[in-house]
Length: 384
Image 1 (cartoon, rainbow, N blue to C red):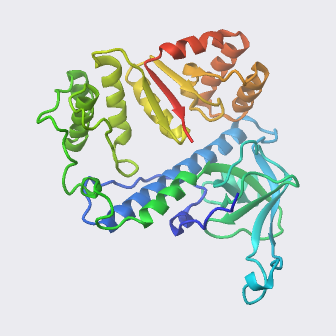
Image 2: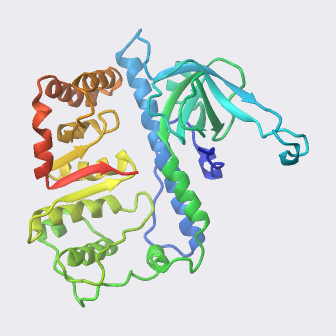
């Protein structure tokens, strides 16, 4: 495949640190430019929070595994290559291709399933990356994983690391979705979408064809502090689910990170699962595990346990492991290995979840999980 496009300048603000402050998301915007700016700042903050989680993981490993080698930290050097183009007519003034930057691993960290747009954090040593006051060098991969000779093509997000010096390497979150969002935002201008007024909060989205939507159950209105736009969306979406608007069966909920979309999705899932006049199952799907897990955790936090979760034990929130269904392609031996690897580096509050899942796999208690999945009211899974 082709190399990824250059990153947005917004992502060059990233660093390997744990945030203490959060930005405030408004409910209305005066212009497309303001909307674009808030969205990008929120997007960068989301990636920064995930980088902070990786830093905490590194700190926890050092705290609870003194003297042991960290399995997800590698070592390597950053190198740069230039070569002449195949055809002189395709070359620039000096006849050379643009230089390419690589991490040449001496000892690879865990790189299975490494992908384009993964972030990588580099530092002089592990202690420097664990230090709250030192933020390392953040890079992103521009190729699909590590080559056969242990090289990974990357580009810096911010200050570039020194070349040909020994460095430690930690794999961070993937930012492919964020880069796609930036591409969409850069093409957004006045009048480019019929949904724009609703997105900016200038006017509410078009109401369903029925003049008045159904009344939301007290369980929803009493338990959730919904603002006016959230309540309006739920009423319209619930009305469509009940068949009150045959002309439109799709409801679009749009807003920046932190604007309350997950809360609304949790509300809607509860409405469908507990108050639908006919039996149904709800599929919660997103292109990241974090997004799916946010919704399922919101449901579990409200006492809703009729859940199923499909995915890798290494990527799912450990508090949701009890709901997981493992693929038939995942052997018991592989699951046990993966769970033990996660146990070795997890935070103290996560240990009990991994230990319980490990016992369930080893004693074959998960064998009937697929039957439970078929009966679950809400199922979460990623999509690509």
